[in-house]
Length: 162
Figure 1 (cartoon, rainbow, N blue to C red):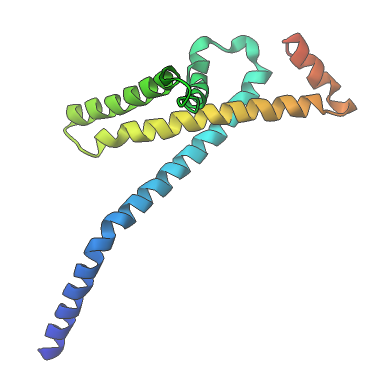
Figure 2: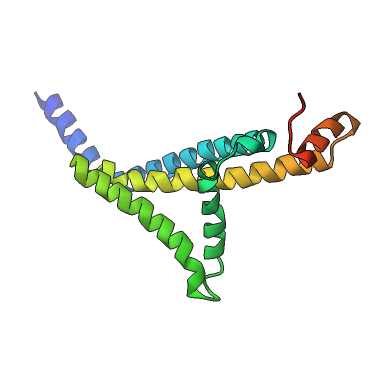
């Protein structure tokens, strides 16, 4: 009986010590998960850029709506010069967070309210990945060797070979 009391007391002490550490651990896990989500959508955006350059005629404005996120975030860096540069990024972020809150209220779920944070990570990742993919593909085509001349000509003409 004494060993069980000792075990329970040790367990209580361990839980008491980890209680202060747990919020920081959970925050670290959330930050890592958001980073993974950003990286996944960054790669998807790079692939979409490659696909866009191959099939430009089929692209519609709605396909490129998220491409405006990266320039808005980059404009935010100019905020020390004028507050107006912050407006596009703030409007986008508030729309994402507001949608998350509405979703959480509609579903009556506090976790669903965090969907806005995930949306920010996904949309920003896709947009930055799209521009990184455009840069990579265009620089690859500009430095292409003789075997890629057909690809370069296709890019200039805007039509795919038959």
